[in-house]
Length: 111
Length: 115
Image 1 (tube, one colour):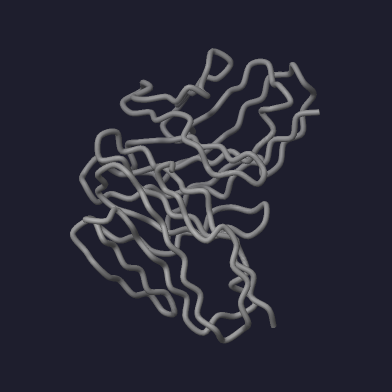
Image 2 (cartoon, rainbow over the protein chains, first blue to last red):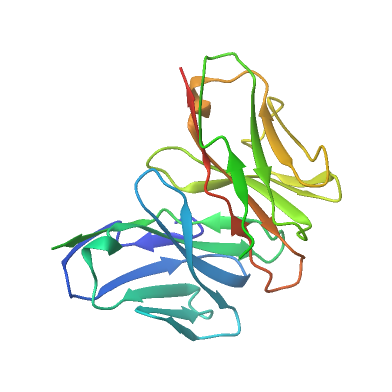
């Protein structure tokens, strides 16, 4: 698999349910970020978690990071129709500092 | 809150034409990046730029591409002779420093359509 692979690729849930997306990566990182992208639009930064952090919260978002497994998860609680978007993780390669994006999870929240 | 801006938001061009995509990074940032995203695919790194020179580039960034910081505020990506496959969303990003936890801030993107 490639650096920054998300799963599932697509997720469809009912409004009010929780959505969990996972990201795996391969190289050492300094931090990992999650972004949201509405169809054909720009990247909206959601949350950054540093390599020495294990969990972070921001509003309805909860991100975890397991550096031993090289994986992260994004949990959106009490989802809303407006959460419908693609979600990407991005890791900064600690050797080069460029960001490597995952393939994304397409989330659809049904009203 | 300071932000990265990009112009134009949408550029339509004919195959073979030159295009210049413009970015204004956050004013005190020192590291600059271009990424692209072909429709429906993931965001891919193109090039990073620091101290007026390219610090890293991907295999996508061939001789048709060039970057420049012509003045103290703009950061541009030039594609000399566009191809159909250059159609994509192009994102600029900037970062203050190379400290471990400096994050990159992304602009809203320029959608390039090559006809």
